[in-house]
Length: 88
Image 1 (cartoon, helix red, strand yellow):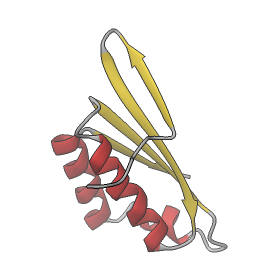
Image 2: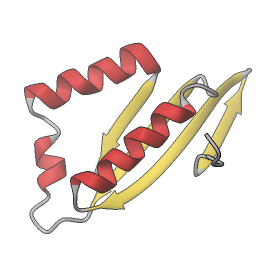
Image 3: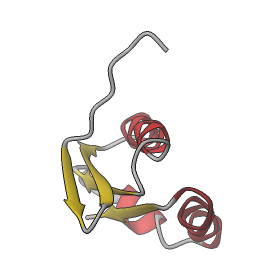
């Protein structure tokens, strides 16, 4: 789409290619950017690991990641796109 997209790190073992993306932030826009990039990487890699570092004072992203809606979304991106999301 006219841009170059590369993950922060890649691992290849036994022919399995894994893209690893790291993001940090305190808002939904930072979070969404990483999900978008992960979706793009999923077209070229077998698996994607997306680690988001929550820098908000109240840890709203860490705390929100356990709700039913978010867990359903995370299951969906794993089942359909092989994207594993971690928030710390």
